[in-house]
Image 1 (cartoon, protein in one colour):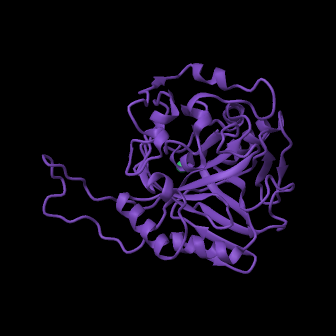
Image 2 (cartoon, protein in one colour; image 1 turned 90 degrees about the vertical axis):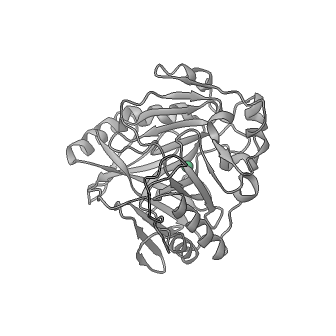
Length: 356
Ligand SMILES: [Fe+2]
């Protein structure tokens, strides 16, 4: 079973024109913009599709109220593998097949998914060599100059889950996703088997004080060439008047310790979640050994204005290799519904959301 990554995400929104403006300003290449639908297609071939609430192409029932990603479409390398995934899913959930061969299902956590055969495109993506005081690979050269920030890939999607360990295990069982890292009590990072980005999906624990108590879209991350392109995009979005509520909380730009990625979030209009510019993430294969982290240590490598919970001398340098998944056990759900969490996790606030 080889899933190559996110082939498309399907947003359901109240104001298609506003969202079309947002994604155009964000730098996504426009394929078509109409009254009821906007489609953007990245260099990798992945698409962002924006539909109006009530559109028959959106999943029914609506997985959560309001705007956001209502369906995640995974791209599969071959028809035989798509058929194998459909057969596997059918042992546990209902599977519906479209006339075009796309299959649809709803995961036990409430996430509508679809899968279709996908020819992922190759594309150019280059960075300037990085100099240090004693190493000068960019000798007698200036850095690449850019005028536009152009996302190349959909790197990952993030959803709140009422049972994040089970959400991952369902994906592993039927879609062949790999366990990559566990931010203990916060969520699990998992990679589709046919791509090298650190994670293709991250499920965030609904029991956290920052989370809703039901399945919901949280954010989507796009691959950028480097930190210059991320900052150019951030400046363009600010100049166009789009909000970044994480700017107040975490200084806007930072680097995660888990995944090593530089990140910058913009608020998607309609309280639909966030769009993330993402650069210099870890790329890895099945030689990777999963790790379990204290969330305060794993979240940030640095920030110019990190929320207090991620700062100070009390942050434990807590990371263990976790190939045997011992870290999952305390976070398995004994029963459905919201459960009490304690310690530093219980102290998380909305201001901390963008740093995890
Ligand atoms: Fe992210």
